[in-house]
Length: 366
Ligand code: SF4
Image (cartoon, rainbow, N blue to C red; front, top):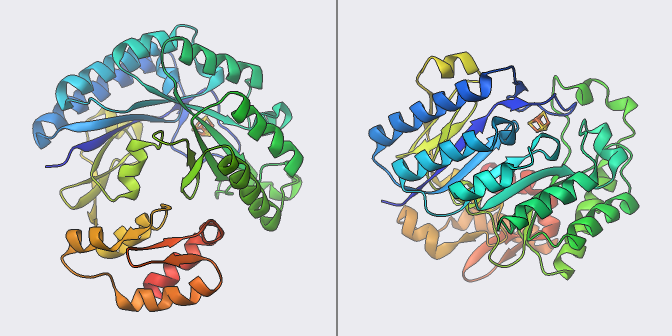
């Protein structure tokens, strides 16, 4: 049996960013230790129940670094003991919520990858996103992580944020290049219903869709010139630094998510913990979410990757050839430079990445 990925959701943040609809809340006193105890209990439960090994561990949130280095270390050590995790171990950190000895403590427990929620290296843009740390603090975190031997660092960059221009984005890209981080995730801002941004969009001086699409292309061109590969729609990596945990999602492989709002895909079934910390603390079972890993889902996820759907892999997984009907539809997009079709695979081009939702749904359901 293949190893699974382990995901731990930490639903706490210092404050709520105005665009965010992730499941997170302000942390109150004592909650860090209490939540850590619940996660440890849940790890024991799932290790017994599944009897599986994991080769990646990912702490996401929320702001996992708010749990504190010693709690992250505790969970990491237990996950290694119970699931044999021996590969990539990532912690998402908010530069404003990371104590000084955090990196040293977690590195000693085996954490070997840090994801820093920078969003922009332009401090005025960061402030509008609700981020209080300045770019100097981001730089300090990068140095501190490297100082304890964690060189696998990824920075989040947001595109289409208030007041952003090509010039200001260039400053953010230059910051990433100057700090020589091996991985960058670049997401376009989405206005999620119920958020402050959603309710106040007209006051925000947001770049329009075309300007944001141009920023994506601009960023991708510069990163590729500097040795990064756009291996997934929103992700760029130097060779060998692709995010192994997230690749499990796009490769339609199995993973176990622990914590409120965390999703799982195990033994062909999808299930998730509701967005309810009390239910999680009380040990409520996750909610079934149907079967997963079918052909359509596989195609949808794999087309997010530059590699696309490899026909031999598809045949090995599903015992049949890739759909001729989908290929026929893809030929139309190929004429516009949006997809590439070869003897071996079907994939989206970078131009196609910008229209991925439309193209993928048209290929599968059109
Ligand atoms: S730090 Fe991340 S998870 Fe927390 S509110 Fe901000 S965007 Fe959301």
